[in-house]
Image 1 (tube, helix red, strand yellow):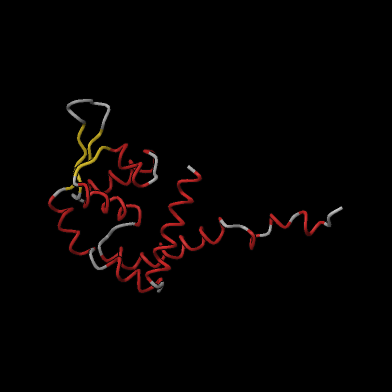
Image 2: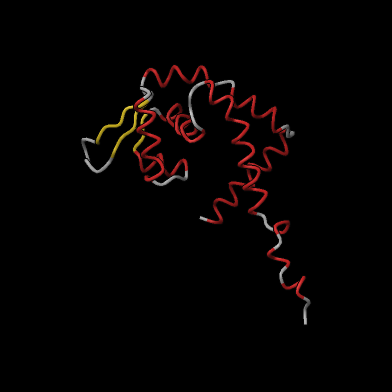
Length: 147
């Protein structure tokens, strides 16, 4: 018969893969805060803008898939970005159920202010590029496995 310590070992925080992922994510997002405060964005607004800087125009469903966010989380973010003048939201002419998000000229201008942020965060994380590539690959592997 196994002892209680062995029986409950899987419940120890130190044995959880989810905890270091959670803690790491929280700490990295905390590192973003001062840089994002300078451009008046939250982290979620920032990653939303990253998709729009790349795609320019995207429907809300696709945006949510890119960001792993549901529409309930995304809607207030989009409303705030629209109130700041960075995006516009318009119903699709082809299918009125689809809401299309488009970056504005003001949103494009913000890109120049944000371009230095990834480098600043990279220096905070301080990982060799090979380690960063491995971590990136493993994290997306986990995402794929749990979805």
